[in-house]
Image 1 (tube, rainbow, N blue to C red):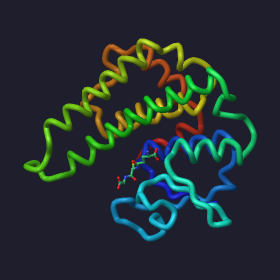
Image 2 (cartoon, rainbow, N blue to C red; image 1 turned 180 degrees about the horizontal axis):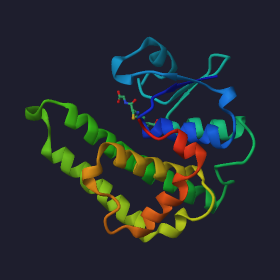
Image 3 (cartoon, protein in one colour; image 1 turned 90 degrees about the vertical axis):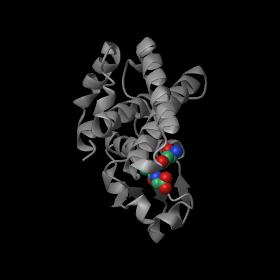
Image 4 (cartoon, helix red, strand yellow; image 1 turned 180 degrees about the vertical axis):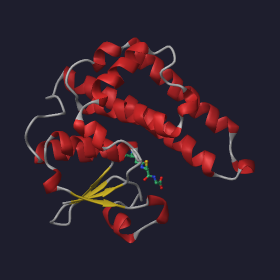
Length: 199
Ligand SMILES: N[C@@H](CCC(=O)N[C@@H](CS)C(=O)NCC(=O)O)C(=O)O
């Protein structure tokens, strides 16, 4: 199977960490594409034109990182990163949604900054920044939900924080968030997290 990939996307990074944590890099060919260049290969795998997208050998395609992660968690076997059905599952999906939501707002801020200054919207930029700040504060207040071995939810949060470091250091997400900082530092030594750091 082939993963349409990008070295900077926090959504792709979630999938790449999962693959590495499972020791399954030989089973997934990672193809780096630039979504903004609209490559035909990406559109064939995801009509929405976004990375990550997964193309199976039988022609089936999956897109949107939560779905790809759920599929790979089953398909690649080994240790499970999605909890079984029940409260733990919903808590973890909630965590993943917060992590992905921070990434979405942060990616929007990146794209907005790349536009000519006269076309940038202060209104939207402000909304994205406030959404990121509120979500980080919620995670700090509920940091015990980040304890333990990685799950898809905590991986999503980690990738969002890594993306903020990479593209938006001016937001200073660590400031006043010691618990979130220690969660981040604790996971940063894992080989799968190190190898996939955005470059
Ligand atoms: N909800 C999607 C978001 C994916 C996404 O926004 N990917 C960005 C890169 S970080 C992209 O490909 N953007 C291209 C575009 O919006 O056209 C997921 O979780 O996979």
